[in-house]
Image 1 (cartoon, helix red, strand yellow):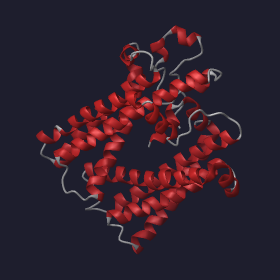
Image 2 (cartoon, rainbow, N blue to C red; image 1 turned 120 degrees about the vertical axis):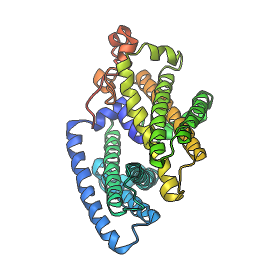
Image 3 (tube, rainbow, N blue to C red; image 1 turned 90 degrees about the vertical axis):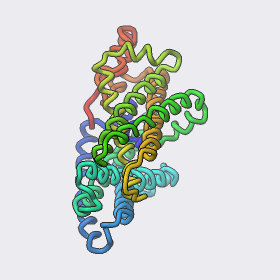
Image 4 (cartoon, one colour; image 1 turned 30 degrees about the vertical axis):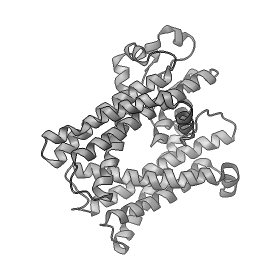
Length: 355
């Protein structure tokens, strides 16, 4: 789901996919696959044992993969021959495999786990959760694939993007600056392990899972926020920058993408245990491992997003203040840096509308 965060946190990407015309088309792109996914669900329930989790996930994955490719083509606004020639099979394989199949499974597990916590278990009442898992994952995949296609279209037309949401720059960052990322990841592993503590005092399974989810959300989101400042200001102290930022602005980033995606990843991890591994109960050890991995991941992703924002501000000073808007927060860092950055045209946290 790193691509989703990049599409909203990186200013040039967020501005490109939140233009009014793009948002209008995106609504249609999401609506039509959702209707088709509902039809697929109605057909599948008569043809295959959709009450089996692996069967449901396989169907969701297949639907999401096809949806990703078709939605990408709509956003790309080109023929398949031109797309294959200009984009290459590597990009299309990543799109269909990761943004489609893998992302679709993740979203389905997210839906199933959230419903399980709300005492509406797919294992006991399969029809409703199965339908929602297929439809929600399909529409979300359509949205993101369309946005990626639109970004790629603009890139081909000559609009520069220093970051493309395929995670390639993250791999480069890990290879070249592992010594900077390592401490954040280690802190994430240690802090995340604490999320298993609620399971020691709460006996109700869903109640314990909810408490652990809240703990991961708060800790993972907070660490992602700190790591973001670490990546954004590599030459100075992230703690100093954190202290200089208005609390209200920090809260906005802590919520999105920090807490939002920490909870998302943890719900997906819980879904793997509940519906793929079919573990009957959430053990303390399992929750500690899941919490540690999710929190460490959020720390690395937060640092990466800050690093890409730093590179964009350094290498693209010709961008207008509007290009430097971030929809996920209003004024973050702009108020923390003060008049110097504002006078220089780098209002780092002005936002645009969410799309």
